[in-house]
Amino acid sequence: MAIGNGTAGRETEELVRSLKSQANAEVNWDEIPIFLVSEDGASVYSASAVARAEFPDHDVTVRGAVSIARRLADPLAELVKIDPKAIGVGQYQHDVDATALKRALDHTVEHCVNAVGVNLNTASAHLLTYVSGLGAALAQTLSIIVLNMGRLLRAKNS
Image (cartoon, rainbow, N blue to C red):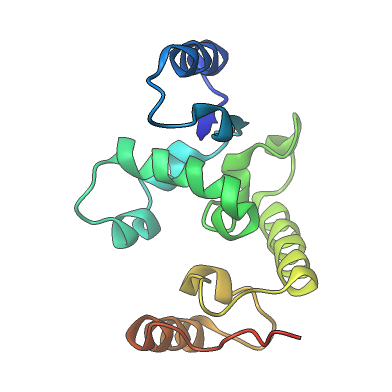
């Protein structure tokens, strides 16, 4: 279970833990771990065009909650959807030239994505744009192909 670390995050965690201890025996609540997850930039994502495209039928609160939960599963894939300035990269980030900051942060994200790699079956078009050699159009095309096929590649069992 992912709980945002923002306002009342710790209190919410304590509440959930107390509710787990009072829950019925049909579910083994002890097997469900609870994690506090950074909310940095979640509100920016939830109001973004990327979020509206992913969840057109949901409001900003639901989109923000989904973003926080997905950060637990794949932080890099989720955080690339947020303008790096919104994540809070340091106390003096506003003193740096905005263009230079964006260029440096984009380069860092691209380096991380290429060092870690992506799973084509689960990667969003936005994440794929950071893969060396893929532009926005090719990333979007790959994303649509995977969506239409259900799966593009299967991992081989060695």
